[in-house]
Image 1 (cartoon, rainbow, N blue to C red):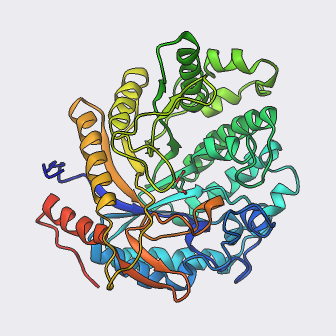
Image 2: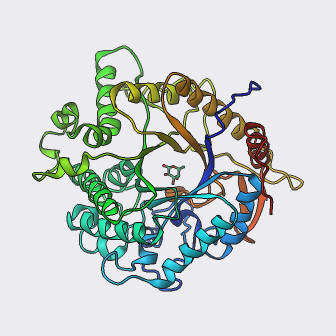
Image 3: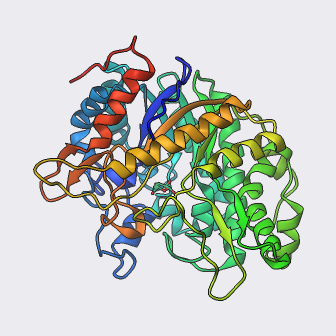
Length: 446
Ligand code: FCB
């Protein structure tokens, strides 16, 4: 892939991470435990048996990590806040030492002229709230709104965007649907109810943050995919339609249209969520931006064993099909169906089995992956979709949830024994690519 895609000068170029995956310092300076601390401390939950106790030690090494970003010349950094760091129980008292950490991080970013894009919830619910039912308990949505308002009050004029949730699909479906993620429940009815409470909490948080008033754009980050039938059979086509309804429309329709998709409700039957009067009006309110995380498409087969996609471009180390066309298709499909606000691609990237050879990490596959996806998103942009920016997942190799440290998504390699950071070829490439995109802005190197 050699052809160069020119983006507008105003396009935002960034990198992304999340709190639990990089911060470590799990019990430091008054932080309360989160459900991911509990989950990772439970034997058998994480494939390589690791925890997030130390992770990339970003809590202590953030100046070095911000310096790396400055060297890359990115405009923006997307990260999440650990709720239980600033409010140890998820309700009640604030922890000033926790707020101080994010204040210091923001100062560091400000000094480097890197815009902050904050996510309030990237899956690490305070354990104290889990003990009271977690997202299955409607009250959690109201506690979340209180936390959101406090973030907006303290930081709303210092950050560019605030996203309520990261990928609520995962919290509901992996946390409560198949037990792969914390809190480790496998119960369809509960997972559907949880998804409603997550959406409700998004709406309540939006209102609460609006009341505070700030300059930040407010929105949500959703993971999405197209759903393709494996064959033309009626069964595969029906499976694909349901997959799209339960994954994409399930979150988009309430936010943009004020109702749940009829097909999904019909298939769920008795498992449909309890929705109180007024809930959908709370969820259906204007958002300033939408974050879209794209990694792969869904390939829907009803055969046993399921028919697999051809994977013409191969698979990543996660076993995920590399399918950039799906990003163009998805964006155009969303654009046709909804009155979309400006979109940021808030995550995109690949896991690669990277090793250091003579001090170098030659991850050509990752560069190719990113280039293809940039071209795919630009194709959608040229057809009218308002896409404002791209955040590469991830700045650093980090704790990849139930895969532990076995999967490396970073453009910067982390040696977990020494915490040494080494730029991979993709990091050098990204820096050069950004210089090409906007020669007027030179990387403000460390
Ligand atoms: C997304 C998550 C992110 C990371 C990537 C690989 O689903 O939001 O934290 O794990 O996948």
